[in-house]
Amino acid sequence: MIADLIPDMPWVREAPVFLVFCGNNRRIRQVAELRGKPFANDHLDAFMNAAVDAGIVMTTFIHAAAAAGLGCCPISSVRNHAQRISELLALPDWVFPVAGLCAGYPAGRGVVTPRLPLGVTVHTDRFDETGIVDKIEGYDRRRAARQPYAKQRGIERYGKAEFYGWSEDKARQYSVVQRADFGAFIRGKRFNLT
Ligand SMILES: Cc1cc2nc3c(=O)[nH]c(=O)nc-3n(C[C@H](O)[C@H](O)[C@H](O)COP(=O)(O)O)c2cc1C
Image 1 (cartoon, helix red, strand yellow):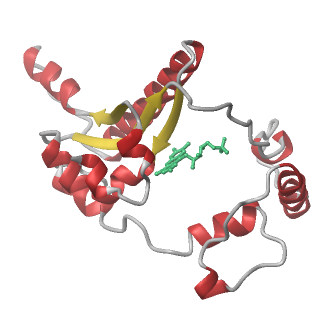
Image 2 (image 1 turned 90 degrees about the vertical axis):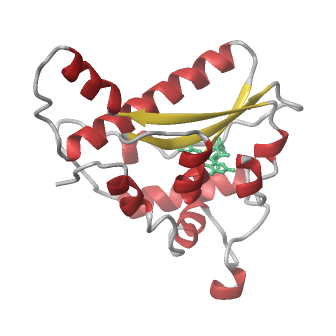
Image 3 (image 1 turned 180 degrees about the vertical axis):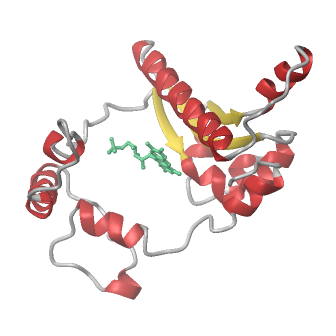
């Protein structure tokens, strides 16, 4: 069972519904065969296309679920166990898990977390990082004032920060190797990543 693989996230087990959104590059290959045409796109974009499509579908599902009063929590951690989950779900070549999603009626009222300002995420006419550090630090402060982190990551490695903002949390999160075997898993699904 998938929940057994992710015991540190009990919401995976508790959610009434758990979905796994998969990238599927198999179908287009089947269609090529069905119509007697060569599949001439056996390269990195085949993987990219399938992965992005799955992300779009998941986002659309989240919006539809929210409109119906459901809450969702995406679970990237399924990729920490890609091979095992692939076996559990009998995923064939060219089909791979992108993310899981817990869905259910929320037990309580949620909060809307402040987001990075558009000045960080939107670039008009050309890519522009002017003032990025100040903008991120400003966001850290605004977010911490409204919604401070209940827990700091990696205290044993980095100590307890006096001010613990979003950027400190993300930097600590990504300082730990995760899913380094995912490329090998994807190549094992016969994707040609050149
Ligand atoms: C692509 C993606 C992957 C995520 N993966 C996980 C996960 O593996 N485990 C988890 O508990 N939450 C995961 N989350 C949920 C976030 O940790 C967070 O709870 C969610 O984005 C909503 O919180 P926020 O509005 O405060 O950002 C993920 C969110 C996104 C968008």
